[in-house]
Image (cartoon, one colour):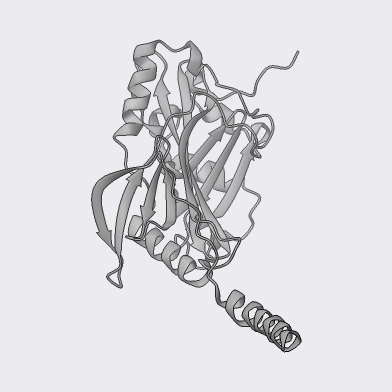
Length: 285
């Protein structure tokens, strides 16, 4: 009798392991205990309620059960270019491009500018994408909520100018992300924003003509499309380098991605900057 019970016990254990364990949900990470409920509430398109919690560094979007399915950086001005990421030479992670030498008043003015600035991404769309990803993969052991990167940091400088980068990394789809970069120029003496047009010795139209005709492209129709849709907003400025990008959907035949053009010192682009605004590469010893 004991032998039969022993065998039945083993069989029951095997059945439990096969059926019970395979249907057990993956453990959900404990919410960050430092997060504070803001009291704000949102609703997804399907009516799912969303709670908004905050830590010192991120905003969390949670279900009413406490599951975090999206996090977004709380925007802050970094005092130097972030370490541990890829940036093209001669930009060096850890460099502050003179931010530390600005007066406290000017530093505060720059921070204040970004504290008042809204994100470029569409929160409703990001929440919807993050919720869809959670709905598909939330029970997987390796699942973790998507994290939206949103930060500002010095990226170049001129004689009287500090250039600050806005960088946002958001969800494109469940397999890829989308990164947006925008450069803003600040007066080192006052912290005031300098309009992009004032950085150059030529007009916007002349700058567009110059850059596109030195882009290496040969298709006249394509070049004219780039000139017609040129925007100073999408210039990315590094020491000795300028990038021009076109957001998705800007160009008639554009694939679903950004269109980038790169210009270095050899392109002559530095000569079009006002002398006090030139983002010259760092001097080598």
